[in-house]
Image (cartoon, rainbow over all chains, first blue to last red; front, side, top):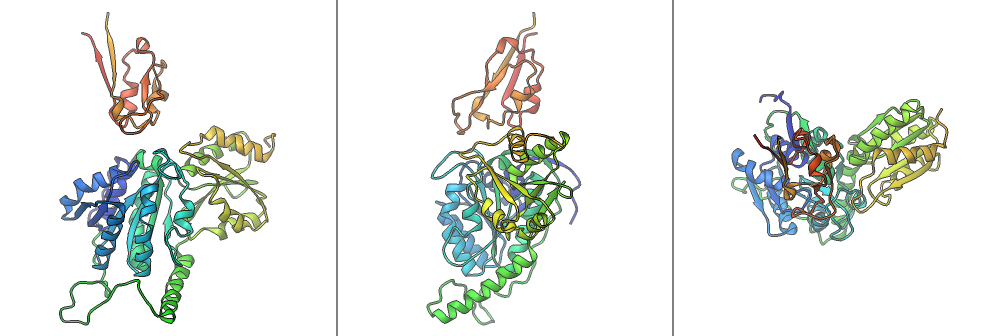
Length: 357
Length: 71
């Protein structure tokens, strides 16, 4: 296993594909949809080179259920889509969580609702974080904001999926998927974990059953309690966030993914004209880094500015985290409109009041 | 006199706007039409101002530009 020290200039979607292969993913089931189509296209070319399987399914539903089938045999599998296509994958995700199957699912968001358009947006927060599919479930949802972080979090996603036997989601948007940046890849990882639940042929051992069906209510409740215990462990161990210039901040901007990248430039501009502003960037959207935000509010941050490329979805979790201890303002753009750092700076100035200190 | 011809393959463009920022002479702007990929592509609005400096071609991640010059 050799560490690749070279920097490679790569598009987000393609870097994601390479990261999955490096993480030991050998099965990709896709269906094209802009702005994530470079990912299945990359996998179609790359999978045969590593003796993996790429299959373009007849629909998103078929793709996600192929992932279910592959994951049941204990291999690392992935599927990807963009907003409208990701809606179609919710059923399979619920089934995989019920069946305790690991996999990685990718949503490169675009403008909605409905077919919407193909510009970058963040309107799928509720869908990813609050359920989307049916039943009592959660999945770790990771939101990278650079192509390098996209690579690192994709590698992590496969580890977490296996660790918890649960799907893990990568949530990006069209801008991250299309952006070209230099990235560094770690070496190839072998997926050699022993999976004592996988369907590998029952020769010489008792048969194993993978299903999400349980007709007896008491048994299904017991199964749910087991899942809830797993979600509680994810909540205890998988919260990730980044704080930027927060230690002396009077006001903190909260944003994830692409919006956080733009907000960071706005925070730098605000600092240069004397505003004490910081940036709080959730990396795991579920579990949400509530404790980190609550601590900032307790330490005297009285105003938060939630910046999203949506009508304001994450803001509900921000408000829950600060529980009325601070005022939470919203700057949301919709329909695939990407705010500029100047526009975010203007909102910062509005919230902080005219004069820089 | 040296002649410059700037060619823009608009169906490769993903509308990232980098070329518009890079052009020192405002030769390029974002168009209002939608291309074959579904994006709003860049457009050459002032070809006569182009000096063939290649700034657009260098920043373009999608290899949209070809620049010709007469001998």
